[in-house]
Length: 555
Image (cartoon, rainbow, N blue to C red; front, side, top):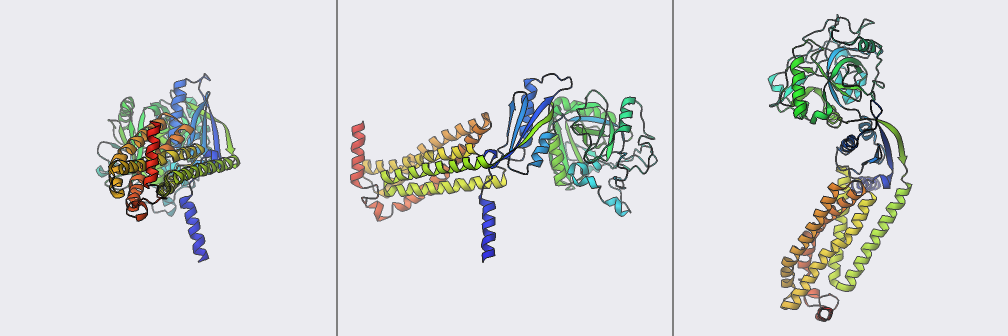
């Protein structure tokens, strides 16, 4: 029994205790500084666009309390909680996305044994080692890139048959497929460019390619590549390196990217959509390279100076829609889609500082917020009891249900949508106590008015009063909800958090009044204590007459 009780307590703690934001639980603050090619000051437009893209990166998985804002020419990112490596990785990958034609490809010379001896995609292999993935493929991006490169033959001659043609069932309607293939390993110290067509390649880039060293931990990430020049780069697994042509399409022309499954084969794919200008540029480059021999029929996607994927182009892709397929898992397809979707930054940034924030101050703020909320709730309850007496118990019960419902909503959002409770949220929840009590008071006053004016029974007065009160309650809550929504979308940071809490409690208020307060009041009206107008019920004739006299005197 003790073990079961401990297990239940652990489950309840995880399920019903919300996560806290940076100001309550501590977290990480990252400062990014812009860097341009000519060291000039960046424009306000490019900085503002970068802020929006980074905010989408950090909050791309759901509701979050991460804050992204400008601080002069720098960008300040506050990420709450511990263990935010994934978000930090998204933030640190900040170069502009580019699409470049592959001119030459070869294995990284400092890791000749790291490449697997696997057959091209779709071909069986008799070697056990051929079916195993390279050690660097533990990351989804590395695994994807390892299956998305051209396949030079072992003799060094480029092979036009490196990638099998996709079947018709592998291409979804309205889009075209980009089919990956796999590179052959460097079996010795031969020239990685032997047998490849080097025409049109800048000799200096060839020299840079031969000297380029790649590894799984050092693959050139962070290098700001010039889109108007050819470029030697590693892939993100650190196992393969490329010579890439000038950028054909820039990441700013990307409209979106999403991961999904093929409706026919069920395999994971990445769907890419381009803007109008980007669609035209993408159609031109795919039309030009589709008939070229490998590896020049590949189009590499370069992010932060490293190749994240380089699929073979099997046919021209007009219309601004393309599909990347080939050995994806759900994790690798989602990660590639996120890299494409959130990679089009207009500026290069360097990490100026990474600071961890202690949660000690946050604990004091949380304690103060909870105390103020408890005091406010207690004052409202005392008022309801003094003014409405027994009827005030209905209001207190409704407040209790609203409190529990709000807490559970916060816990569910925290567990499933990445929501983190911060001090502005707590302020919004405390302020909403009075707003929630207003709905009950409107209903109660309507009941008393009906009993005084029409000399109706309590049961009849409750039903008539509800028809009149619910309109007032709905109008008041609608105004509050609209204000919260507008404030949430127009504001950022703490103000947006306050607006979210106000909107949440407004929705809870409507649910509680309609599904709890009104049914409870209908049941209460059937009891003799309230129906007969007991002196402590709050509905006795003497109290209502006194209330009516006070109203006339005030008028």
